Image (cartoon, rainbow, N blue to C red; front, top):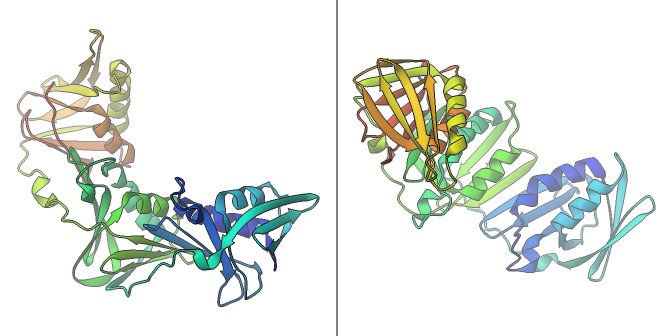
Length: 367
């Protein structure tokens, strides 16, 4: 069986879907891409790690009876090594695939496509169309707050909530919380919630363009689908009850700090020089003098910064993880930032100034 395809279109398709291939290779075939003909005669490609799956197509020539899998990373490396705009030919014989262009030839091991795990699609309970740039902004504004390793598995994902004309994303690791919203061009009946795993969110973000081409989101009982037009990502959802995030967001905050976002971010970056990887605590002192941030370490080294800011409220000191506040300042896009405070033992609420649709909660820490 012989296949042929263009370097550019094949490389683009493989780079979209390579992230779903299993790196640990608990099953060798999970590191492979399945190649077969789609309904239009193009080359259909599938990858999966059993938790999520990518499907994409690239124009080319492929026999209808072809159904084979080959290492997706090796095939991608071979395709990328070809000269620009070159036509690449491949031949499948037994358990080997020979890929060639110019004077180059590569022989890769294959496994039968019939052994590749099938991804069972579910009918969507709700479908949404969202511009790619809008969805990308939503993910970037929240995904950094997902838990990395937590026994509370439901925190290792992003909560998507569709209700009315809004799509909301919420992420928390138990120490901080990020919430953002974007408007929909349609109205959603009721309230639909799904927790999408961390890896699926990272894969989706990696493939979203900064334009207004639509993404069709399909929400089923146990999985979620993102159709980008050129590729489709499917993922299982995380079963579990996400925390009541509305209760976590502080209200009635009598003190307010307003500062230049970049000035505050750079001040925190400088005091971070003397912090350790394990201890990222910083103390913020607020009062008539404005704002001072300071920290120290086990070697009795210290750093202190005075930040020009507008503070309205009673004098107070509050400690928090420096990285958490810097992460928020990195994703905010306005020149000014507003921080609402109650006292030195309560969570702070960080927003853009003027406030937008995104809200960030950072818990205090004892110093």
